Image (cartoon, rainbow, N blue to C red; front, side, top):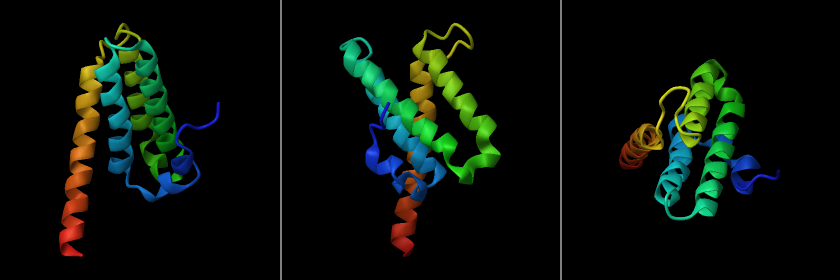
Length: 116
């Protein structure tokens, strides 16, 4: 399957911090949560995008030392999408975890902008 996030997949993803990357993953997890009960197609598309971005993060050589954590995040997200039967994961919990990453990344960017 060709990447949905072509600009990011072609190299821009590697310019983002880990928290920024996970925040972007979380954006699509939030969209999936929004569409879960409303539109199965949009839900599936959002999940596909979130997994693609998470796979790009896992493939990023800068995070090799965090591979176990990142692959566990992917496993937990997949478990949540499939009903939480393996780990009791929920999409809402995954959304909250990714939201925290986005909030910290945004806060860090705001501080860097003010000081720079």
